View 1: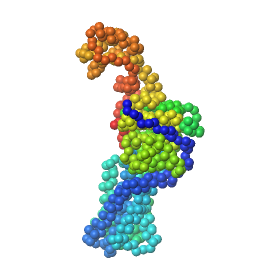
View 2 (view 1 turned 120 degrees about the horizontal axis):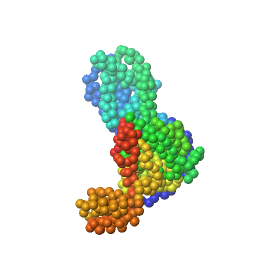
View 3 (view 1 turned 60 degrees about the vertical axis):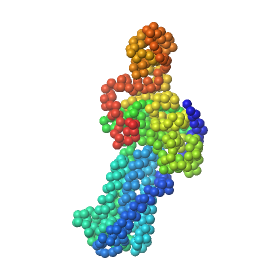
View 4 (view 1 turned 120 degrees about the vertical axis):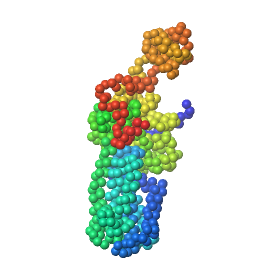
Length: 281
Length: 353
């Protein structure tokens, strides 16, 4: 036999190793989210390409298709488009939540977390904090980019802040859908399915065009899409053209954008918690 | 040593499980699993793929709920107080449960802080473990560039941030090269020497033979034999005399003659031209066997005297003709049905590879 590596010196078993503190979901959630932040620093390309893709979409619609799009109610198309793109970016975040949950569960990291003396809410909380942070960062970059191509919010800081809060509120709701899907459907096929399905959900909305330009039934579906509700509310709060002049949603956009995410959260937060518990089966 | 016995623990038993059952669909992954481990011991859980080793570890470490039976770690009921159990265990699963994109140090810091250590103490502990597991030079490199052995060592280090009362290692050397395996073995010996109880699952008999004080052999979701390595070997009877016969055509004749010479059963392996005779005392049997073969003009290429290996024990206990397999109680759990469906428990599916 060749020379064996030297035996590890003492230190494998540490001295007095009682924990310094009790389990605390908020602290643990931040620690787990900190892992994602380290990922971004070490491998920023995922984040960068995700953003580049959204910027590309904005440029395509603003300059390639935008000229051919007639906005009901009038107004500048770029000012109409940008708030829609903000809402769509929140929807696209669903994929990354789902992928991250599924990957961790597959690779055994989730099991490692589950074997630690931490709160059962910590893993999901960590995911929520990290994804909200990355979405907020994306939003900031898109807003700056929007300003460069001529998008302007015309209202006061309070309205603008409320618009941002409603956008992140949609993202928060979709987190639980992502956590649920990621835990329940871990195969590579499921991730691809979500990546594909996000497109019709994103496009059958008022992100790019007004619902009034669509055939009646499709327009109704698009108008009631949660993404449309957030897009409409954001347009209103930023003082941008809404493209929709009549209908319940046009008159109650902020209410719609508040309620839809609430409904999604009410359904998928318990389902996500259930899926996490189901890991014990 | 005091560290392995946290305050409040009583007795000399680190782990006791009795009658554990875990059902997946129609099949039982655990079907009356019993295990008792003395404090400070290294216990090997040995069994073929799909025997239920991983399910047993997952149930004992609170990752999976068992359906029936009781399990106590350090006197604490696993089913009733999983959170308290988690404070006393370390788990190294079959997967490298470390974050590939982070450095070794960042991984240890994360798990140490999640285990409740303050930043300073987590940092001290990370350094201590990196040195102990010879990862200090690689501490600031991303884990994605690590060799299998380095990852596994980091994985074990991460499970030791708090000194566990009992450390579970699920097939810790699967997929490692001989050098990687040697370092893991050395680490397990060190951990045990420091007083931590270890439960180790493995498919490698030499591993169990090398590391374990006692071994439980598992098959079809239950323990089919338990004892020290030498006890298990003794169960298989006495010594083996193996004779390699020069003329393959006269194998049967050689077996007949050798068996009659010592009044024992002889078995034949045609592929290796080997006649194996099971005898109570090998040394006494050698001379009569050689004389009988020589008298018949049979050429002997090789002659060996040996004790039964754990491999033979293993095959004997878990093979298709092993005692108990024909029992009606196993109808519900045919060989591959002991596996849970992959979608429900992907980690167990891994055992089938």
